[in-house]
Image (cartoon, rainbow, N blue to C red; front, side):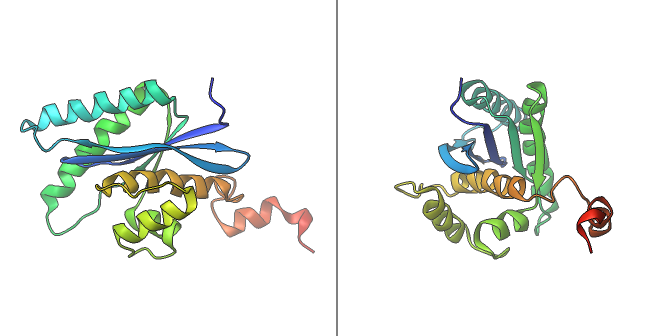
Length: 183
């Protein structure tokens, strides 16, 4: 049994490297559990890469028992083929979480960077530095895909702290549900 009220798995999907980070939440505070990468560069068969992503995600789930997944959504860059590969990688990780009935939330890369640094156009290095400060870990990993996965988990943690999230999809619904407080 975990000491945490909630454990959040964050994944930065990729067809060559999948970054991941897990945080535990206790008394509304986040604590780093682990972060790392799954290096897929030596695997040439694209279907074996997807199986590896699925299997490693299942391994993370079985080892750390996360309650929720925060995953970065694919983005359209210069090469549409890259988005296609990212979407497949994301799908493999999502399928593993669905298999274990884990709640899934997807975040755009700009949203993740914005929540961590205050700037949606921040560099990977800025994201890593802010996470190091916030979670007080010793060293920034060599492969920043690890901190990108951790950033997805922290973004979700920050969104969970927002009292309006999930309850109200708009200001009008918020006002309607809180009429007794408005004078």
